[in-house]
Amino acid sequence: MVLCLFFAMWFISGVVMMYVGYPKLTPQERMTHLAPLDPARVTATPAQALAAAGASDMAGLSLAAVRGGAPVYLVPMGRGHAPKVVDGASGVLLPPADAAVATASAAAWFGGAYAARYQGEVQEDVYTHSGALDPHRPLHRVDVDDPAHTRLYVSSATGEVVLDATRSERLWNYAGAWIHWLYPFRGNLFDPWWHDIVVWLSVIGVAVALTGTVVGILRWRFSRPYASGSRSPYRDNMMRWHHLSGLLFAVITITWIFSGLMSMNPWKVFTSSAAPLAVSAYANRPPAATPPVASANRASLSAALPLAATANAPPASPAALIGALPAAPRELRWSRVDGQDLVLARSGPGAPRVLSAANARPVALDPAALRVAAARLLPGATLTGVQVLDRYDFYYYGRDEHAMLGHIEKPLPAWRLAFDNPQATWVYLDPHTGQILGRQDRSNRASRWLFAFLHSWDWTGLLANRPLWDILLVFLSLGGVAMSLTGVVIGWRRLGRKLRG
Image 1: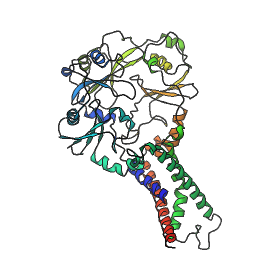
Image 2: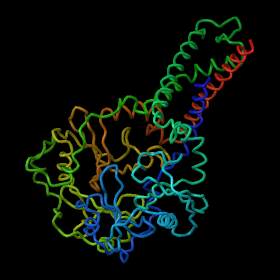
Image 3: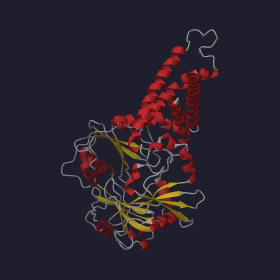
Image 4: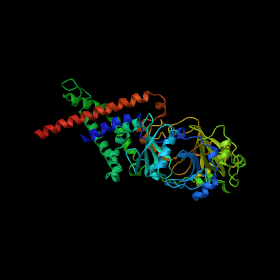
């Protein structure tokens, strides 16, 4: 009975999650709310920002009006650490954000059009369980009087908005992601065991669903009907409906419970043993010995024009970079590709403009040189092929913003680089910017099949034919609800008879 209630809850909340996801800040939302950079308000140089933060590498440095509406440099401090914040006007290292800064950032998020009401600090609440927010905790919570009644979470480390959630999102999440992922067990005394609770409930759920299916099949008359004329032996309506719905929807129930189990990466079955990518080798100039590149004309690659070397040139000022663009960007981000310092200028959703960090001129990366640089990403492995993806495929695809992975940008065209290491690594690269988009090994691809495909049915062909995807998943979910709730009623009746007896 208890497991059937969990099944019914998972089916219903899964339907809600098809349309309302767990709150997150997507790159599209962030770009929409950032104010264009004003060159008159940015007088500090990137070099000054790095010096103030005690850093030396410009790669990952960004400039945007994210703190109280004022432009600031965010200097990366390494994985798992919040960036340091340097004032774009004075070049001074700024302290952690207090309530006044958080309120100003929230007001600036809507261009000052609505009042922002500070609601205090939170370490973690029902909407902020994501581990990606850990470097920014504690979080300032600010409610805005906009038509959607948005709640903003502001980083105490940087003063930037790191999550937004409208009132509708917050309410629907109680019937969606919050209950689906068993988040009532997060942020309290059960938190250390949350992962194990989900895993073992799923394991037991699969076992119960399998045994119930076996019993249902054994009780079904395939050759001839029972004396009642039915192939199901049950005369009680609830028992008969449970039998029939169980036979019809058992496979999808087992599939969804099993794939939900796989989403937790139980016992680390999908954890890759591959070495990390040699990002520094890819970013800097190639060493004297060039790694092997299979199926390529090495002579033509070695003769290819290298990307321009700008490491020793003084970087262009933010004013020069902004002035080189047709419209003021909302963010400047410095990067390094094969020894060349670049600036990615974004004015909104979509592909950024690529400028030289030295002279603010537009840059077009040379494909041949970029391929040689990419071959250094996995030392000791050979780059066996480069496939240009002009459209999404089974492993590289985009989802709606509200979906679990909808915040991850998947630009096109993209390169899929295949390496011959034991883990059969694929690396996805943006040929326009030179940015690494992600990597996949055999273990990740297995997770794609056993979790994402089986659980979300996110086959690109089906997703492209909505509302067919919606109709199919809602129908299967309702069938699972019918099977689960009839099981609860049957169990409750039997329990009542035993208690009365």
